[in-house]
Image (cartoon, rainbow, N blue to C red; front, side, top):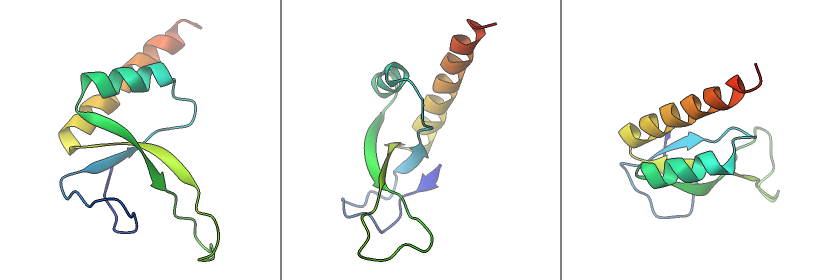
Length: 89
């Protein structure tokens, strides 16, 4: 989890943290985490080393919320993913 950086243009909320969402995470799990915990899905600029200022900055989805809520959401998503993958054993 990372603290909000000042490069984003949206309102700065000092008590909010980010949790990157790995590619391939099912939308249903994200929706469950958002509904179960006090977190939200937002877009965040991806900082690429060596990129020029006039380049288009790619965005990524992240979960945003208080640190405790993000930790609980992360644990929930990880547990659900483990359950999902056990079906393939």
